[in-house]
Image 1 (cartoon, rainbow, N blue to C red):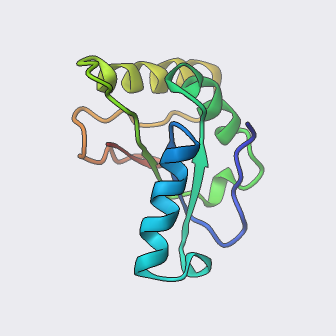
Image 2 (cartoon, one colour):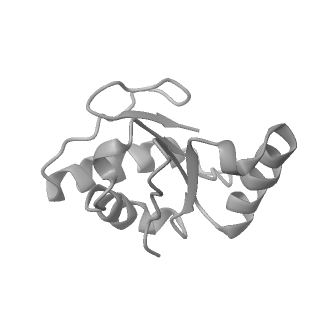
Length: 119
């Protein structure tokens, strides 16, 4: 799936699947109008697709306007889920010219040219 970065959005939330995407859209719609959000929610369709999706995001023409990227990954009883996200970011960095920061801990932002936080 191709990433979407509308002109008005400076933050991306990357979620694993359609159900996750719908959850965050519904949650946000109870808080405010989704049209007013500075957040674009994209699904990357499974943990094994995250690296390729990050590469696609970095190649998007509007990637320069993005300030923060949140990544949501289902653990599904997998104790290595956070490590798999770190590894996907590192592998994506090997493919792109812009280095994305790799968070050291879940729910703690890694600051850099883009801030990244993993849940």
